Length: 285
Ligand SMILES: C[S@@+](CC[C@H](N)C(=O)[O-])C[C@H]1O[C@@H](n2cnc3c(N)ncnc32)[C@H](O)[C@@H]1O
Image (cartoon, rainbow, N blue to C red; front, top):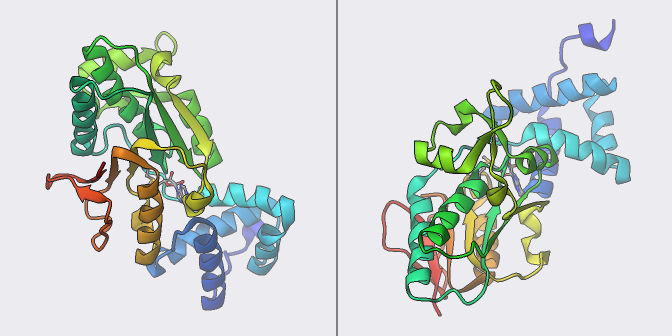
């Protein structure tokens, strides 16, 4: 019987553990037992495309050498949750806005303002940050001297993010004013809108695995924004990553995570922002 006509083979407990371990080793993400069906479906779909009909053979393929790394990039993109939207958590972005405005009002902007969005998916998060920061510079009549680094492990998402083109449905969370100022129709009649070049050129998208944050260049940041990523990690790993991120903050810089994503973490150099609507920390001077 051809592979396409066969029923997908069940993942055994051992195979589930093996794949789960590989995913966690490489991304930090764990597949919960109730997501086993999803893992199985994604694996078999990909194996079908490649004409492989044993989980073990595919596992060996993905684990081996350079070819395996290329195949891994395809597979991992299918396994990760990439849900995102513009202005996903407005309160957090408003906290960033207040930080930038305070810096501008107190004339504390001596150098480029640097922000970093980790697990940036298809770009909605870093572009939202760029819009908020740009608003502050524009309001003060200043040149937009800021840059945003946006990193993720999904290459297809990064590619889409660089293009910065979205359907009008994706633009729904934005106010009319934000849509007008920061998007242009791609072509007459089409339902595609591109982020303006002024915003796109402020954001640099690149591959970056948060598990390797300790090996990343130590560029001091004014804002580090990491939401809806750590939630998938084990608690000890969340704390380790946050400690590394704390090292990368400039004095007075702000680390913003998702509300409730980490509950048992404190850092001697950081102070929690006194606002129940956000989970943000500022580095003491
Ligand atoms: C649920 S999305 C969240 C996107 C965005 N931060 C937001 O809150 O809307 C999680 C993103 O993290 C990325 N991701 C998963 N594991 C990662 C890792 N180890 N390093 C960097 N990015 C990762 C995924 O590819 C995905 O784009």
